[in-house]
Figure (spheres, rainbow, N blue to C red):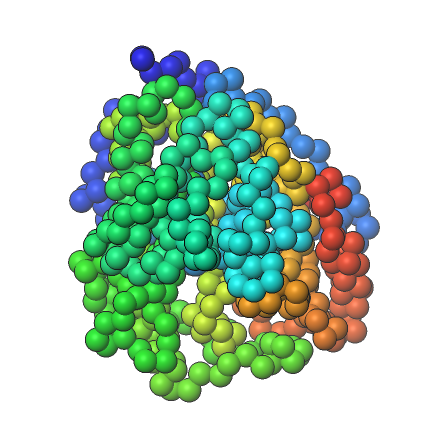
Length: 514
C-alpha cells in the first residue's frame, strides 16, 4: 500500500534536504539557557492584587490537524530538567527544532503515579495509582481501561509500546499480561527492568531475555517498529520508555557501597570522571523556617557526599546513550520519510535531585524533583521556542488525544496545550500531591504550584511556602512570615479547593505570566 497522504497543515521546515550526522555533533549544541534557567519568572498579581489574577486569558484559536500525525513520546526515567545540559543531540534535534516547555512539572513526582497520569490525563487522586508499592501502588492498582492507547486505537491509530511500564509489572504472574489498547507491546518485566545488562521483555505475550545494555535494546526495538512496513498503513502512536538514568545494576567494582547508582553503557563509563555535584545554594541544605518533615531530611557526611558525587557522575554517563538513542529515532524517522509527519514529545516521568535539600531522589515538593523536560517537535509546532507556561504531565495525555482527534475514555483533568504554544507565557494553578512510597493510604503532602509560587501542606498540618522569583532554590520558607499571610491563605484555599478536583472541576484556566 502506498503511504497515505499526510498533513495538510503548515509544517515546520526542519532539516529539509539534510542528513543527520551524529558524529558531527559538538559537545554542547546550544546553551541550556535557551531551554530556561532554574530561576522563575516574576508573577503578575493581577487586578485583585492576589497571587492568582481575577481574569484568565482567553484560549487562543487552534486549528485541529486535518490529517492525523504520527506521535512518538519518549520518556526517560528520573531525568532531571537540568540533565538536558548533558544531552546535546536532544537539544539540537528536538529543542532547537521545536518548543521547550520550561516550567512543566510532575504534580506527583514519582514513577508510577506520574506514568499513570501520562496514560490517563488525570491527576493522581483520580487515576488512584498514587505510589509505587502497597495499597494504591504499582501495576496491580492501575485501572487499565479508558486509557490513552485505547482512545487512540478507537481513533484509528496503531499503538506501540516499548520499555518500562509501571513498577510491579511482571510480578505475581503478570509477566505475559498485555494491557488493553496496545497494537504492539514490548515491555520490560520486573525484576529485570533495572538490570541494565539483562532485560527481559514481553513481546505480545512472548518472553525474551536480552544480554545487551537496556538502552540499546529499547532503541533497537523502537527503530524496528518505526521502520515496519505497516507504519505506512495507519497513523501510529509510540510510547518509548527508557530506564536511564534511574538507578539499577548489577553493581560494579568502584560503585559506592551506601548509595544506589545507575549503570552507564560500557563505552560511556568514566567519560565524566571527576564531575562535581551541582554547585547550587540548596546543595546539602535544609530550608530555613521549614516544618519538621523537611528539617528531618537525611544529612550527608563527607563519605555520603563523595558517594553522591559518583552517583551523579554515573547518571550523566548513563544519559549519553539515551541522548544518542534519541538522535537515532530522529534519523530513522527521516530515513523512512516520516519525520515531517511525526510529532515527537520528549519528557521524563519526574525530576530528580542529587543532594539538593539533603535529598537523593524525588517525590518532594521542591522544584528540582517536580520539574520535568517537555520538548515538542513536529508539524505545526513552533521551532526554537522556549515557553515558561505552566504545564502538568496530565496535560500531555490530554494534548495527544486532541492532536489525534481521539475521544478520551475518562474525564480529563489535563488541558490541550497546543493552542498555547504560540501564545505568551502563562501561569496556571496545578494541584500537587504525594503519598508514602510503600503505602498509598498515607498522604505526605498536598499543595499548589502557580507561576513562581509553591505551597505545600503536610500530614501533620505544617506548611511551606516559596516564591521562586526571589528564592529559586527554595532556601527559605515564607509560611511563618506575617507579611506573606495573604499569599499563604490564598494558596491554602486553592489547595483545599482542588485537592479532590476531577475533570471539569480541576483548574484549567491560564493567566498572563509577568
